[in-house]
Length: 261
Image (cartoon, rainbow, N blue to C red; front, side):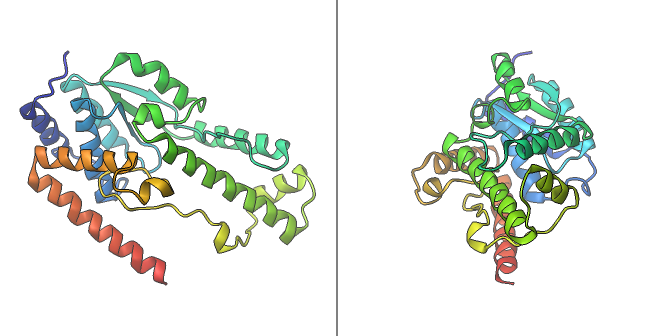
């Protein structure tokens, strides 16, 4: 089935998505739901390569509904295991502990349900499988700026390194066996505020955290994607666009109050 990309077809897709019935308790973030709708329409419009559903906050009923709507509108869908962490570099600590961490993550992900990819170009399937196996990052398949994906990967690695330093300085850990034991015990580590990752939330219409350079520039790759998604939302329905803006402001206000505590 051919994907129709005219405004009427895109509005029809949005209407069908908005009409889905699913377990809201499993998908409680209203902003995430609205942006999921927007991303799926962006895929149909050819403005985004693929949409990933179910990584993190997962609702099986929501995924089933999206799968059905996507098929009805000519989009393709693929189920894979959850996407493992992609490391653009190995962390600076014992390689044996690093491999243990990766195996632990693989075992944990194997116990979870599958995630859903929605896309329109069948040629993207190889890249989706590579990302789903952790061989590559998700920048290409999700249309995220590579700089933002890389920085967020780096922040995660630095947090892991800070945790291992905590094992050493706060528990006297010496080697991989000590690190593994402490990780199994879920030993708490005090990490200095300066070493805690700072994820930025400056754009209302995207679901990725921009890197520092993108967050500080109105003409950055992340900012351009944000404006493109806002334009699409407005084109689809000014009411839909205002709903995203309203919820995004409420989330930002709640986040500021939380950070002040």
